[in-house]
Image 1 (cartoon, rainbow, N blue to C red):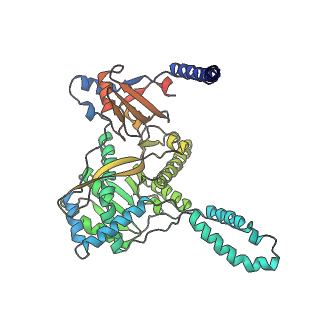
Image 2: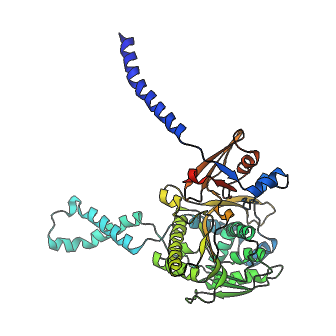
Image 3: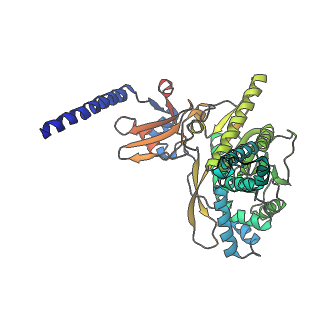
Length: 461
């Protein structure tokens, strides 16, 4: 009897599960796998043994970067009058603080949150059924309690005032990271646009001059003028002092200013804002600065922030705003061309921003600044966007971007990519089902690389 009851109960549970499994398997069978085609030129070169899959054109710089020796020597010179152990410790604290920094709260958010907290406090039994005179007497007490709760609900934000000591802290805490990040971004521009030879550079929030260091490495011969904007005089003095110790000397002339000129002229071939937009007090100020930077851009605009949620929100906000400006300008003048050069292979809404679950960020490897002979390898995450003016997308600009670490297993690999259709897609490559060149290109690709393939449009959409 007990056996029969259990058997009947098992049938009632098991039968619906079978129907669910059948339905699930049917759905999987109906879902076709995307057809992927390796770039024709890359395929030919690999098959002719003229190119190794791990060095295909979509590969972005991977080496662990060390600061040039002249920069390290210049830093040591700047630190001669300061106790090294103490300033290294303080630099570590600053680095951690910057990595956790969030967006500044907007006034309307603060006001609405204040009213919400105050209302919840007023609903407490202690404050119910009080007279008007008592209400006036209790207002200071209620305000104090509201502010106490509000501090726990709103992110505390304040701009950092960089004096000489804090500037040196930033140099030690962020110099190597910022250099490695900018090197990787500019290396991609140099590789994909070999004919680009900028003569002028604008660096907003120039800090210790990291943008100038990297730009000088890639465009030493062509770069003639650098405009560096930073509100801190001490930062400007430090940046100028480091560059004066450069070996070999910079060919370009540097100009240091505290404020960004409002006029749209002159324009600059390459405009950069690195780790600076998060320091602005509110959204209106950020958008005003972004619009100004865009007007001053002749060819490339690079915006970079920390690879945090706050950093991604800033870049996403800037990306959407510039897109709106591009659309307005193109309606007025159809010949006014611009597109997202990197990292996005499309100009549609960011699928990461739509999902709200993830941030679009990448990593780079570098050696931490050290005054001993031991090199300490580290990695740093960042988020960025690069816009290119007066150009249309070429075939390579449509290649999918790998947005998460590649999963490599025995005889198969999985690449999570952002496609030219503006969607996130998981691509599976197997040794048995895919061409050898395609399989090994995917297997040897890494997070942040372009995947030199075309996805069947019908499957992609």
